[in-house]
Image 1 (cartoon, one colour):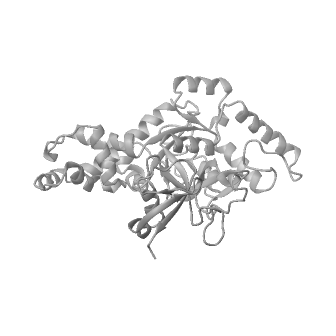
Image 2 (cartoon, helix red, strand yellow):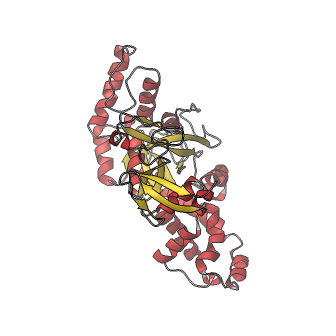
Image 3 (spheres, one colour):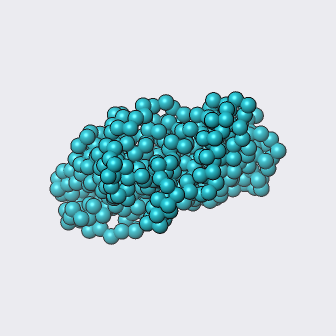
Length: 391
């Protein structure tokens, strides 16, 4: 399952967002360090389900499918708030950051209202919210630098006497962040580093850390608390930085609670009201709905889906029966895997199970019914049967 680290300074609204997108109740309060240990839950990436092509309702083993939209599960790791010096251990920062070592991507949730200081305390004077983006990125890089540079001279002298390639050598350091040999090799094709590790400077280590975030473990900034901003303030923020996403975790939580309590028909923004909803609830929810309709704020599910797609992830459906698109129990399209664009049928076999990958024979395309080989490059919404002599 894809793992997503949710980080930011204290009181940025991470706990509120986590509760909204995972339906897990956690402590939520308007003060720093409400969360003192990581919360882990499941959220979803949305994609159109191919069930309509076979005229049969799918039966997801994980996630769900509503109105032809498949919700593919991803793991969310909500890390307690980071303060300045976190990379050096201040505020248990090193311990907190260690929880995102194996995250596939990182979301930096920041207070777009600017109504908190750098340590997350409420502040009427506030500060520039865009400073939070730089602050968190700097803390992550500093944390990585600290891990990589530890005992560097001893490590460099030993590895420089080894006949292994440079990427294999540096993997011993990079593996602590969940990087594979393939990841490190890709970084080495994009950036230039000294052949001898003993010649690496602090700047080289810093560049390598930055390359990890650029090519392997990207950080996406999402501004929160848009419910506290005026339309003009939101417009001004977008003009300053048009590449970031803007949400309201508070609105997300209100919609989720209304849906779970049966007041609205769905958690999508085109919801309708049920008989259980009162006039006061309708007034609040209609006002929220209008904000989304005007395009001022994005739903988090849509933001997350946009991020995943921008990174080249595709959705692929493994089946046992390529004709009916079923598993051995007759479940239609039971599984949906997030794969990287460029992954092959063999990569998918390994994702299902290592033994299936090792004993791969061939695969079958569920749409064309044609036999495909291990090097077949997967496409979004592919339905694939893997044939293996694995028992």
